[in-house]
Image (cartoon, rainbow, N blue to C red):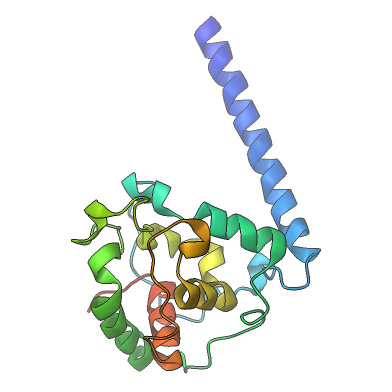
Amino acid sequence: MERHTTFLCAAALAVGVGLFFAAAIPSLAATHPNAAPAWDQMGLDPWPSGGMMGQPSMGAGMSGISLPRHRYAMMNGVPAPYAGLQNPLPHTRATIDRGREVYEKNCATCHGETGTGDGPAAKALSPHPAYLALLAEMPIVQWDAFMDWTVSEGGAQFGTAMPSFKATLSKDDTWAVIAYIQAHLPRK
């Protein structure tokens, strides 16, 4: 009986903490001029869906999500050069296909073919590359400015090995790979 009561108390605490954060994050974001837009304004539906549907939402790569970057963006917004940017590319299959090509050439080595952080170079990296397949399911990834900042600047500011791509990818290639990730890394 004691074990059951302890479990119920822990479950109630977890629900309470979850409700607190569900209420606090949008209100924190609203107080900062460059903060993330409200979840319902992040454009969750313009891109074709696919990817993780029906798959588990937790995995070994969960630790690969850049929580420091996410936390920073929720508290401060993205840096000024990226604030308010939106993907200028058309929402088409051609954009997604271009993004797949960019991903395969520049990202799959670390993030893996399907975005699970299991590319050939991943074993040597600490922290582990982000689990993009799971991350693509999160509302923060639908925020274009956040994604452009992430791809363009890389992870040095947050202690990860992700390189900066602002000098190696054209802006259109950057936006195409962002579209591909936002579309949940669909395969052909």
